[in-house]
Length: 82
Image (tube, rainbow, N blue to C red; front, side):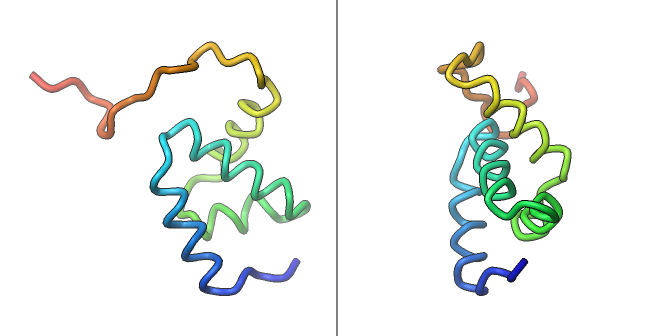
């Protein structure tokens, strides 16, 4: 596997951070799948996410187009504010 150029990695990271949590998982999973063996670890290192997040994204993608959470987006922080 050839590492991505630094500019591509930076664009991937910026795009990843602009997405909702669910779409982050899905995007990371697709990028890792494109790379094949070692892709999960490599993409996790670029995006700064956990490998489990990417694996969960892969599960999410396998369930498309059915999405029980369609239209629901968690707000950043995830905790309720009182």
